[in-house]
Length: 326
Image (cartoon, rainbow, N blue to C red):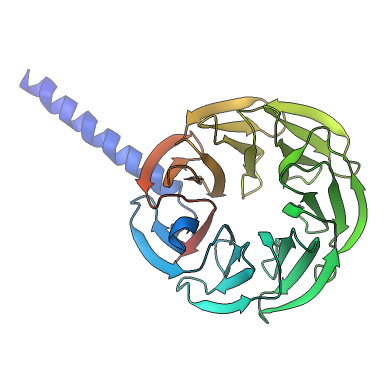
């Protein structure tokens, strides 16, 4: 019996060590992952250590809603009240505040990390920020209600949805990232909410503002190719940042997140998230969601959709990005 007990203890220790090793191997290379979370009701951007959930930094920004960041480099924080703030990598020191936009909505950073695109719903314009020079270098009119946007993996195409329930998607040629130009527009199969290009750039996945599925569209023509079952609308979507054929789809009202094979469009796994977890971000196998309705951020192993951590951060947390700190 004593030998058996010792064996159980040894097995238990081995399992703990293995789980720790698996968690470590899922971390992005080059440093420690940190979730950057907007807490609009608290007028703060929070830097949260993963997977401990400890708040490392607090930055005061009035009404921050959207945030964009790459693993390294500055973060772009959007406040619809009229400001866009650049935060320094790691320190989160404010570098620049742009006040020339009327109602900025969403920011996205180009694949090369050099430019940020910001939509403005009031003016219908897309602004281009040179991140190194910290200045707006170009604006282009796309249409009233400009909101969610997606940049193709090669940076050559950008799609912009006109409103959160968009009946029009605008296509821009961004092969010259400093000077995007409108080259077309089309009507999506159902009113669109969020947008994301697949890693191969051949398709764009468009989440719905009202239907319980995601539309997979041809990235050149906008033609419907397939649909993917999802939870209650609206949904949000992110693809594997390392180009693996995996998509993650959230349903905040359905309290679910799904992992989908981007080639077969079949659901691989599904997990429960805190109610209101609309927005999400990924880096390596680290996946983070933020709940707008209960202020909780959760971290998952993106390979298995196993939840590692959930922590209460504020009354409401809207947007999330992942940075990797040295």
